Length: 482
Image (cartoon, rainbow, N blue to C red):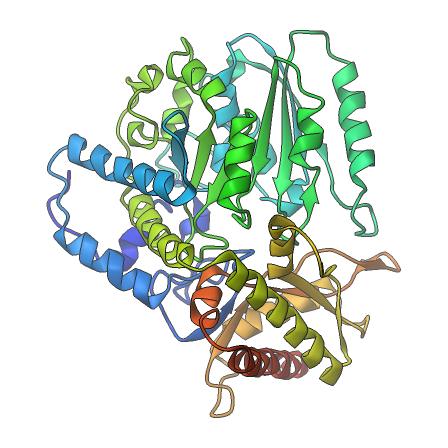
């Protein structure tokens, strides 16, 4: 399929001609502050995006050097290995199908494969500001990224075939105008009110975000399943992948589609995503008489299960980068999978005790996230994303964005601060006098647990506190320099 191999760092983020999220800027990083190759920095950015780790990079570099795609069968076989690995890691049974994609945003197009054409569809998106900026476009079958002029499509263009559906798209926020989380019962009432305006037979696509980029679960999947009828598709957006494999299998058993990614909690290079399709829906898509032809613009045949005869006419894509990104993510998953649940929970609690301790020494910062002291494992994982703000209200959202960029850059580094810092991007959580206040996020990834969970508690506390103190000192320096 290719005669000469490109440099691996170019391949890892290949696809930028169709997706500007994968393009490198002048600083050799993406707009999310991620590099295609490892570099020394403190990484607490997994709620946004992460740079590949050194061990994972070494793993896929060795793989890339020895693999040769002499025909499409070998290419498809390698993607099948990714599915097999995910099946083993999550403990999926053979009745679950897996579709691969670059991101959770891409996956928003897939639910239409489970309904006939010419159908009325009510698609209710939850918290678009807390998932991905292109979600609403993708959910209508539209191009959601800026793409190279060599292609016929442009951003916001509807892909061929999606006009065959009658789509009504609704968007419900998970925070109110002041940034406070909206209660589940209010969200559910809004969903019920929207659904009431549609006659029986309309397909409804309902979303639960599990977790959002600030750690919220809105609304719970169970509450949506209680509203479902035979024409309802419930999607659990678990793209942060801060969820146990037991919970994933429970949701699949109840007929939910579950979205996951390897590039958030698992710290793989951006972007790598998958849709887990339950047995109740997989045959519908596999033999659907109508699949939007334009979907092939973003999805090569290799990204769908072999048994899906409905996409046999699709061409194979040039998804080398996605294959390498998933290889790296699977590597990280396998490392994390060897850590016991008890050690994970203990490390999260130690981290949260440490950040409370450090914040007492830095009273100019305030923790904005709720911390769960006694909660089930899935909710406890919400504590792996912490949002903090500045008590000085002069530091607004735009100022926090500048601080975020400053921390990533190499400009401020010196002998006392030898490492740059990649945090989670600022979010709009608190509004005062019509202005959004400044925030930053600290997000733990699987590498954090691999590095710290095997150490005794006193050593964990010492190492974690040192890193947190380094981060808050650096923020103060970055703030002063602006």
